[in-house]
Length: 260
Image (cartoon, rainbow, N blue to C red):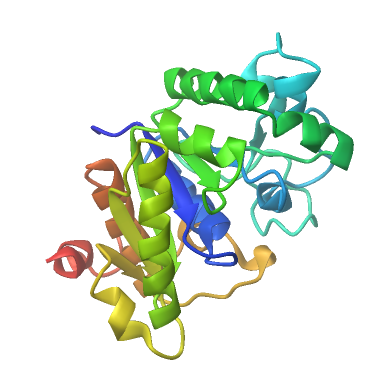
């Protein structure tokens, strides 16, 4: 793989960035890679929903109160059927590791973790993750906070996640400007299909993911699925990381046909 760290940035709120990061990480682990997702969306703290059980030390703790601790102190496996139920503390049964470094903190600590100084520490934590994992995904909100800027500037490559709608296409253009303002660029676009108005934005995206069940408890689909959604995520992983995915699907050759 050429790109080791990838910042996934939502062009709009609710674009599906966190879910896409989880599915990409799981697909990578299914292919035998060790993949981590680092939270850079401290306000929503969406990654924490994909962890089963209690989160003790989180990423914001490492950026504020326990700066000398290893990244592993705030790392948790992605849970199967991760809606907080069931005994899934050991994570997914896959050839590689699929793990998250979530933010799960009270307002006071979140405020301290959103400073410029903490953002510089976040950049170093992302670099630390890159030495431990084969691939690192950074889950970032639309670029307008110190942590989102840190995620974009620390990553090797940035991919925008946008609804496959006219509104999403317009938001993508605004995002490109914001990312350029911090000295980076949007290198890839992943469109998330919606029921209406999908074709307009699909033309601007390298990969378009079809709709899937939106519930957290339904994720990750890519752990065992071989339908159109999982194959599209495999194509997105290949495109975003310049990698070859060797996962065998029920119908061989579909990833190549989807990519062509």
